[in-house]
Structure formats: C-alpha cells, structure tokens
Amino acid sequence: MTPIEQYRQDMANRVATYRSNAGLQTAARSFFDQIGIGKADYVYNFTWLGVPILQIPQDLQAMQEIVWHVKPDLIIETGVAWGGSLMFTASLLAILEACGEIEQGRVLGIDIEIRPHNKEAIKAHPLSKKITLLEGSSIGDTMTKQVHAIAAQHKRVLVCLDSNHTHDHVLAELEAYAPLVSPGSYCLVGDTIIEDAPASMTAKRPWGRGNSPKTAVWEYIRRLNDEGRMDRAGNALRFEIDHSVEDKIVLTGSPDGYLKRVK
Image (cartoon, rainbow, N blue to C red; front, top):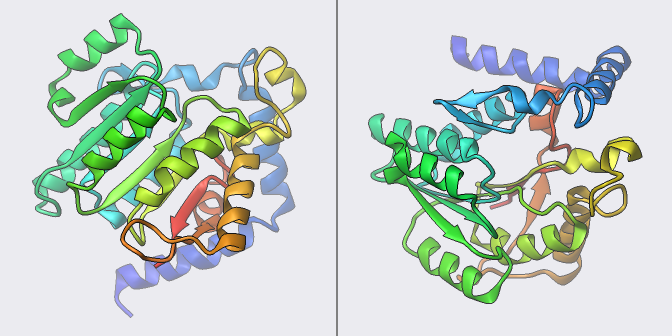
C-alpha cells in the first residue's frame, strides 16, 4: 500500500466512527443551533476571491474534493445570491483546466432574479468568462429546455441546487436537473439542514420542517426506487445519498444532500 493509499484508508477508518461518536455529534448539533440566521449569522462571514459566498466552509471543502474526483466540465447551479458560489466552482474548473484534467469548463448560474449590483460584480470578475448567468424560474419549461441543450454539449455534468428551499420547488428542480448528472457525478442539494433546524429559524420563511430540501430528496429517491427511471440516453437513473461526505466534514448544511449518481 502506497503512503497516499494508507492515508485514505486511515481517513476512512476514522470517518466510519464519527456517526456513532455521541460527543462529536452533540458538539456539531450545538454548533448549528448557535450559528443560524438570527443568531450568529455565521454563513454571512465569508468571501471567495473577493465575492460574498453564503456557504459553510466545510461544505466548500467537500465540494472541492468532489470536483477534483469527478472532473466535470459543466457545473449547473440554481440560486445565485451574491455569486460567490459561482466564483468558487468556476475557480475549481479553472484549476482542472490548468492541470490538464479538462479542456474547458463552464458554470451555469440560474436564478429567478439576479440583483443588478450582484450581476455587475459577477460580470466584472476575472472568472466571469467561465460563468453564464440565466435569469428566470429554474423550473420553467423554457429554462429547463435551455439548460438541457447546454448540458448536451458537455461530457461530465455536476449539479448544485440551492435556490427556493420549499419541498415542491426542490423536488421540481431534482426532476428537471438530476437526470443531467453524469454517472459517478453528484447532485448536491443545499440547506437540507432546514429539516433539522429549530422552528424559530424558519418561522418567517415559506419552508421549514416537513417542507424542506431534505424531504424533497427523500421523495425523489423514493420515486426513482419505485419507478426505475431511465435518463435521455437510456441509462438507468439511480442516486444514493453519499453519507461518507457529510460524515467526514461533520459540520454541513446539507445532511442527506450529497447525492451520487450510481453507475
């Protein structure tokens, strides 16, 4: 066994103990109870290459590892906000290009409304040449057809869903975009933590427990298992929740949200 293989084996052995580590899990739960919206507002503390990024740093680390492993040439993101997540994924694709792992990478950023100052900042950034902004409903017929046409021009696709967090909207996004995910790649569903959050944190939101991205994930997986669907190329469409990702990073906004397409 090579040193790097030994490193990975040791890591896997450690991670396998984390889910049953009561102290670790209690500490993680306590942390999340304190960092949320209206308390510490933790996710509003970070930028990526100068652009605000509303993500938990541990999830960004997980994303980096997934992108390096999958090597997509197209990343589709719903939900733009300030644009930091687009900059993050665009920078990862630029690194893949620089390393000769892909020829040319592209990020699609979809949002029903992109605020003018955010749009201007994104377009002014040096990485903007790798980003295409699409404004409109992510689940509208026109939008989904446009995205499917773009995806057909690429070899490996990865999808990130992080816009409207209601059950129905996320489920519709999964139906629209998860079939574009390449075998072995991922569909990442953001803010599934809403299902586990105190009701006070979502009191003024249209989503909450029982009506969240996590319930949409569960429903989508159930549908695939019950119906045995195929993608446009005639390949079996199967996803599994990759618990190893969230177990490793411990602190995640996306429990049950790392969906790996099974080959």
